[in-house]
Amino acid sequence: MAQFEIKDGVAIIPEGTTVIWRGAFQDCTSLKSITIPESVNEIESYAFDGCTSLKSITICEGVVRIAHRAFRGCTSLQSIIIPASVTVLGNENEDEEGCFLFDGCTSLKNIVVAAGNPVYDSREDCNAIIKTKTNNLLYGCKSTIVPKSVKWIGAGAFEGCAPLKRIVIPKGVEGISCVAFSNCSSLMSVTIPDSVTWIGPDAFAGCTSLKSITIPESVTEIKSSVFERCISLESITLPTSITEIHAYAFNECSALSTIYVHAMKADYYKELLPEKLHDKIVEIEPEK
Image 1 (cartoon, rainbow, N blue to C red):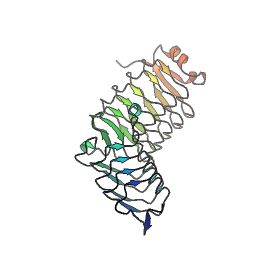
Image 2: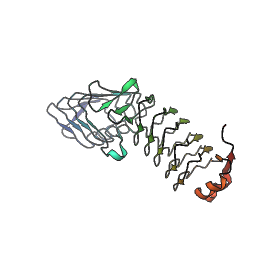
Image 3: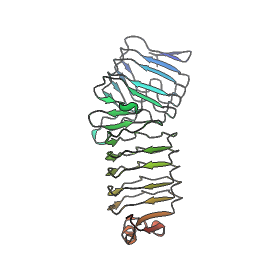
Image 4: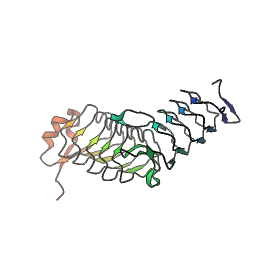
């Protein structure tokens, strides 16, 4: 921290600085405003983690990389503009693509990627970060509207977004990555279209306000811990397509009272579900 100074809540970063290092301002609760100068090309992990009073941040053109969880827990931050110069965000693992930049930023409502960015965009004023080439939504917030062109909801895309109450996933989305909506404690309603074939582990873990959900026929597996700690979940509708239900899928779902399955499939689901859930299976006639 010797390189940087905070004066009257404003961070002073000297011209010529090229890197905001890992944890540089971590837990600086007095920090309210910062401008990242053009000389900076990288913001490392946890750089502003836990800066709970940070309301305003200006990132000048020149920054190329913002590492994962750089702004985690900035609970007062309401808006962010990602400049056109940024070409690397967060996690670079292509198998579980996600950026994990703003988890716990519960006041965030405006996300914009500057025009001309060659890698990312925020098309249709969606208030999200989308990787242009893959159409993967990497990060959203409480005011995000998922565009119809999105193909995948990235890992941790809405993780810890406590104010998010409902989300409509449009037809065309093919997958929901691990921890995509985990710990969205106010999430009450989720619409999953039949284009989705994959729902990753812990995707909805800790969604403590979620009361019911319907899994479409396009999904074949219920991954591990996908609804773990959904303590308000009362019912779930499972399709005939399910071939495997992984461990802890419904762990700590203390309110779960009804698991709807298609007629004549109760015995089949008893083979997939733990014994303690067998008495919650209810057969329903398929819609005609």
